[in-house]
Each structure stands twice: as structure tokens, then as C-alpha cells.
Amino acid sequence: MTSGFVSWFLSVIVLVLLFLSGYIMKNSVHLLLTGKRAQGIVVGMDSASRSASGTVKAPLFTPIVEFVTSDGELIKVHGRSYSLKPSSKTGDEIKITYDKSNPKNAQLLLWGEFPLGPAGFLLGFAIILIMIWMGGILISNDPSLDDPFHLLTTVIAHFHLNPVRYIVLFVLFFAIPTCLIGTYWTSQRAIDMLANGIKAVGYVTGTERVYSKSNDGTTGSGVFPMITFKDASGTEHNIHGSTAKPLSRLKTGDTVEVIYLAGSPNRGVVNTWYEFWIPPMFFGFMAGAMLVLLVLVLSGNKSIVAIVIPTIIKNLDRDGESNFVLFRKFKH
Image (cartoon, rainbow, N blue to C red; front, top):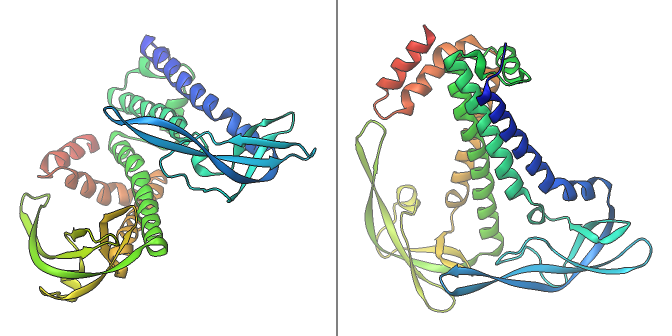
């Protein structure tokens, strides 16, 4: 089996993306695995600025940390990630890892200090390119699309992939991380709100009807209370679309407890458990269900291929019919 120019070109792009991703993470990973550990203390903030909107400059900060090496040398370093609201403040203790031969080459052991964003973007782009490439091989059956090392065809053969199963795997590749991120983000928001939120009294000042369109084209609606409250400065804010109405049947004039963060009072919510935990529970359940489906599909479970997959594909489109016909075509 020979590989054409396109395969060699794609191979070079993937290798370059993988190399750049590894290069960006190289120093941080090296320090994490081989560096000496020390306890540092935040002694100040290093500032920079960015263009927030046009000519407006918004300050960005990163912690300045002092630590003592194993040789007794006092070293001062600053973080590598600047942000509007750093996760640490002056006086906080932070664990660091440093190169013993060059102590100024240090890494703060904080998630935000690792270059996961740019490295993850390049790695994700490489993975997406590989998945699209594998899909092209499956659909076209063109031997010239095979990679020079025949790795992709080996993976296809090992997992007994076909166009239908591959489409499902491709969708799950995006859906599972999205649900995991959604679970993490919504749960962190709930924890932050409960730990640092400011409570206030809100009043139901009226109701509003919210409309939504379903997959089959029908339109549904729900009635929700509009809740008004004042923050610590006396500024008035409104809460729209609260889930308090269907669960507690609030009426105009009722009072509720509202909670909000000092930096964003306009995003306040009614202080009830379902306002905080329903979103992470939903995302977590979806992530778990899709992980189970992923395991079943990779294991070649025939009942999943014959029953669950066509149901998913049928509901991906609003009318459902075109995708179901496509599934039948691939199946036969």
C-alpha cells in the first residue's frame, strides 16, 4: 500500500503540531518531574496591561513569589500567566518547583500557570485533523490516503470501525469533553457562589414567559418570575428565568433570598439548591452516559450499533429523516 502526496503533507502538519505542543509544555513538564520543590510566599503582584476595548487598558496581574532554595539562596520569581483576577494574593503560600542549576527557572504549582491553553489548542487541532483523516479513509476506501506508517489503518482495523460507528465516535469526541467542562465549570461556579456569595432580599415584581423551540419544530413556553434585588451599593438588579417559579409557585410580591458575587451582582440567583446543582448534575449525567456509550461502541457491542446509534443519528437533525436514511445506506 502506497501513500500519496496528501498523506505525506498531512503527516508533516500533524507532526509539526505535536512537536509545537510538546515544545510549549517541555519546560513546565521537565520542572514538574525533575525540579526541586520549595514553599514560596506571594510578596506582591507584577502588572501588565492589555487592550480591553479600543483604547481602554485593563490591568493584568501575576504573583511575585519569594522562596529559599535548598542551598539557602533567596530567589524572587513571578508567574508566567497574567490575568484580571489572579487566584492568589499577597501573603499566600504557593508551592513551586525549580531547576537546581538555575533557580530562577521556576514553575508555580498552580493550574493557571501551566501553558495548557496554547498547547491544548495545538494538540486538539492535531487530533481533529487525525480524526477527519481517518473519516476520509473510511468513506473513500482510497489506499493513497493511508498514512506513511499505516498507523491509522491499524487503528481502524483494531476497533473494527465503519462509517456509522466512526460518526458516533466523532460526535462523542466533542460531546464528552464539552459535558465534562460543563460539569466542572457549573460546579465551580456553584461552589464559588456558596463560599463567597453575598446574600440579599429579592422581591417578585412580575412574571415573564420564555419561549423555546424543540427539535421537531414545535414551540414551548414557560412562565418564570422576575425577581428584583439591590446589591450592597444600592444598585437594583433583575433576575430573569429563575427556576423558582415551577418549584415553589411564587407570586408577585413574594420575597426570596438572593445570592450574588461582589464582582458580578447582575448574575445573582435565587439561593436554592436547584439553581446551583441542577446544571452540574445534568452535565455530569450526560458525560457519564456518553462515556458508557463510548465504551460499548469501542467494544463492538452489536446491540448498541443496531439500536442506540441509529436513534442518536436520527435525532441529530431537526426532522431526523435524512440522517436515518444515511445510516441505513452506510449499514447496507
